[in-house]
Image 1 (spheres, helix red, strand yellow):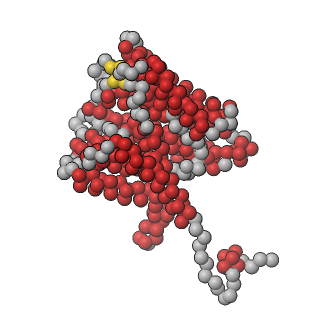
Image 2 (cartoon, one colour):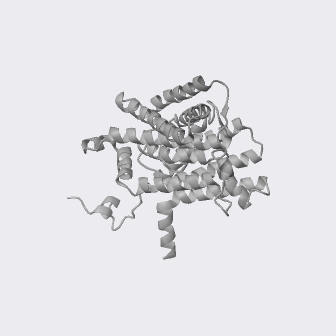
Image 3 (cartoon, one colour):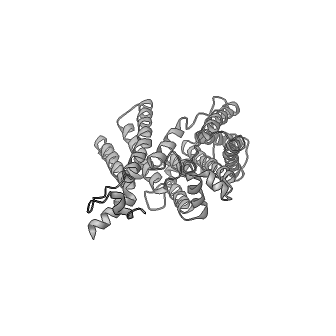
Length: 342
């Protein structure tokens, strides 16, 4: 009985178990570099450094399950920080500025989806263009300076904890969004539609599903989460620049694909994305302890992205391999399994 349960667990959650092993390995690597790594304080404080990636990765999971991609998320993050900083400089209340920039981020995401749907262009091409456009607008608006001077209650979110615990506020915010996205993707009709469109968009169109509207909506959600991440990063750094989060889209996509989401669409889980986030976050933290240069860290993440594309597909191919059926009484395997033809 126990053996059967273990086999069933591996069949249904095998890739997530592999991610747990990878997380343990990355933690062991980091612990070997510093005797202070495995302390409770370090483990919790470490998470604040990659929660922005996590927020964007949650929405990116839905985007990639749809069979799309969004390369502009880090640029939206930066532009939101720039606009938010400029609004603060002009004395606009943050109670007004925060919803305004979140609305802006959502509109920027909707533009991505609208362009892809209207012109029937690959999202890769569209978001590659808007990636440069949004960051360029941020540079024009702010120039090469930084914007700062935010109210004390807004800055240093990574030094704010749940009272009486070592749990930082960014981790709590990410966990709350992760629960929301889990139920959205795995427990609602919208989530089922995302999977259906990712598996076969044309069949869904013939079935009467508003495929284009769904795609635009998910891109808008991706923009909203990038804007939320932009506010969190601005709070952490207590400043904003047009080049903040430069290259972070690579980490976001790597997180989602490493989490088991198929780059071809139709498959993926929020649980896998969350596990992969902590794998990559712990690995980056360990490389930082080892004084690995940022550009070399990007090389490691790039290699990890390639492996993240190959390994899940190889895993699924192995699981879907044809089962050998023993011959019985001289009958062909197909006849044994399905009965004699005719």
